[in-house]
Image (cartoon, rainbow, N blue to C red):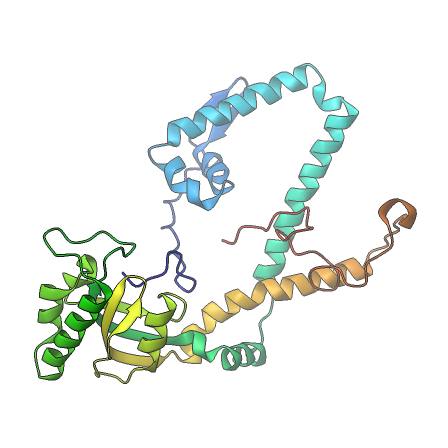
Length: 310
């Protein structure tokens, strides 16, 4: 229960790659337009990642119906020559350029050369980010904590919870098995059933008081009761290691590549011939957002949404 609502250092695992799609099997026909299984998969890949699993599973038909609606309307628009209206034509052109800009930014990331010196520098400057703990805990909940109480257990005041945590710590220091006591006493039902096991975690994944105490604790010692919004915790760190540069290199490269791409965008901007009417746009600011005065895709001030990583 000590985890934060949105773990800052625990990115969700990437969804499993879908099976290869058949490039020849036609799965949808709208008028004279045929869409193959592979093309349908490409359309799913273009929508936000959080909706892709649904579109490949229970929502597959619903997603196909949305495509049908888009195609039917766009085909009718072409019949009525709406696509030739100046305003619509300009919007279509801009949307095409916007999509190409995102694709180009992604291509710059994928082709970026990350040298060893840059990776090592980043690792040395952020080494604490790669500290990993494996720990157990016992939680004694206080009345009013932002978690559901275990049925049948009494609500404890702060003083009562602290006293109980101190009494349990004496038992643990006296030799009782941590896992056995956690199963019987912990008010964190999830980890308690696992003997208090929290698995591995990094900084930013737990509420601050818990994190500070855990990372400061010696391996195998039982901490004094640690107060958090949930109650009082007794923590036993089982291992405390810093992942090696070799282990985290892929992760670091993934972090560095967008910065390299943004630098390349800045270079492209500097090399472009651009004239702006200061009377219309206003004078150039002293420092624009982003690298080299170029707003980052997806950042405030940027027209281009941040490209999705693959």
